[in-house]
Image (cartoon, rainbow, N blue to C red; front, top):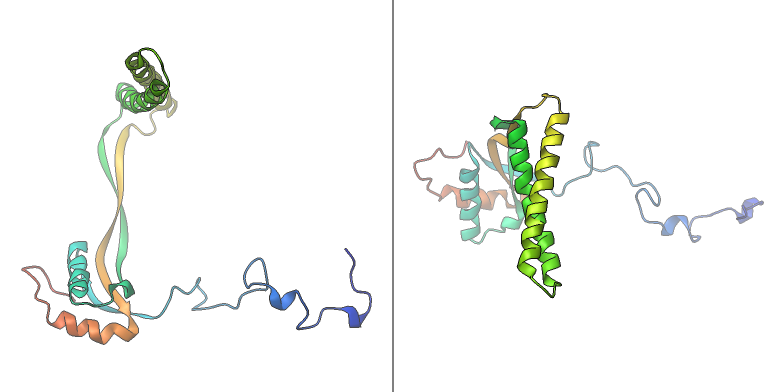
Length: 194
């Protein structure tokens, strides 16, 4: 590749190259947008109500949809998120082997069905063998993996994110229309919007 040796041969605006490149990492740098904390997420929004649980916020959006409001310009935003890990029970090597056997049995059943389709002979035997071999390998693998943890995590758990409140937001140009509709909405014995 050659570089221009004279100033008249250098790149100038309007020449192919720089102005024809897309903005972003592969082309010319894009101008910062929004508040500088990441990409702008869209038009400005307004919170029209805040609710203590998700079903209440969902009921509001459903009411707006029933009244021909453009709900595609609406969002439910959970705030003050908390990660909750619910402990399901104690995990022993035997239980780990049992869980592994169940998982391995499903995988073995899938492989057995796959091979059973192409078997000219006794396809049921192929499925049963796949199921049994999968369960055995799954049990061995589950027990070994649990033993390798060295007792650092002897329990099973399930994680979920929970919000302390849910805000219903709409694009700013539709806020008045949404508030008028919500003024006609009657909440059943639950807490109204704050």
